[in-house]
Length: 131
Image (cartoon, rainbow, N blue to C red):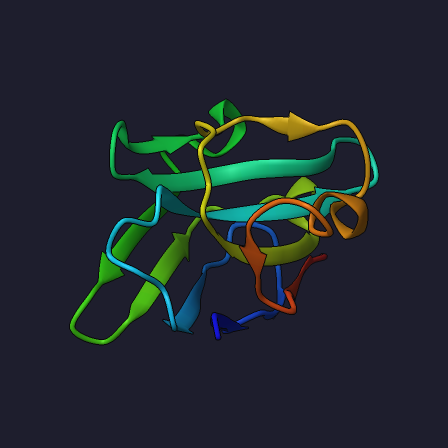
């Protein structure tokens, strides 16, 4: 059974930093990629970053230079380091395995719908950026 669990969300002021972690289990070595999706009112379900077996690491343009993703296979954990957080980064962030898109991909609907038929998803962690 595939399991993913996010942690590290919370509330910060604009300009602040957070690091999200995703611990995973049950994945095979040939999983296409692992990424972070987020859902915002304006952009819907967006792929913020992805670590792809085929294409390496990619990010959505809106987070380039501010977000950094990494993976520690010894710990079965993927991270998303977020600095310079903006109000518009407020969202629920989901860890997803089996990602075959590059950063910036947007699903034209809510993540709750997308997750029904695509990939393996964690339960999500809330990030709130407010003054």
